[in-house]
Image (cartoon, rainbow, N blue to C red; front, top):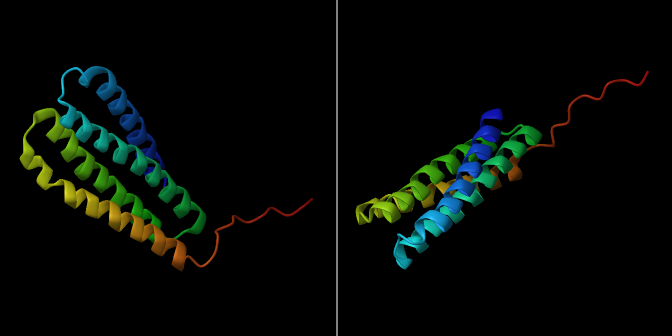
Length: 133
C-alpha cells in the first residue's frame, strides 16, 4: 500500500502544480475554451490523487485487494484522462480527446472497486495489542 500512498501524494502535488501553472502561466496564452479543458483536467487529477490516498488507507485498514486495484485504476485514469486533456489543451490537437473516455472508464472502475472492497471486506484490520505489563 506504500506505493499507493506515494503515488497519491506525488500526483496530488503535481495536480496543485498544474493548477498553479494553468492559473498563472497559461491563462494569458490559452483560449477560454482550452483553459476550461485544462481546468477540468486539473480538477479530476486532484480529486483522484486524493482517491488514490483513500484507496491506500482503505487497503491498509481492511487488507482487501480491491483497494489496491482501485488505486491502480485511479492512477491509470489520471494519466489517461487528465493526461489527454492536458495534452489537448496545450497542443490544440483534438485527436488526444479520443483517449479521454478511456481514462474516465478507469475512474469509474476504480470507484466500483473501492465500493466492492468496502462491501466485501470481512472486518477492519487491527494490529495485535501488546499485553499490559
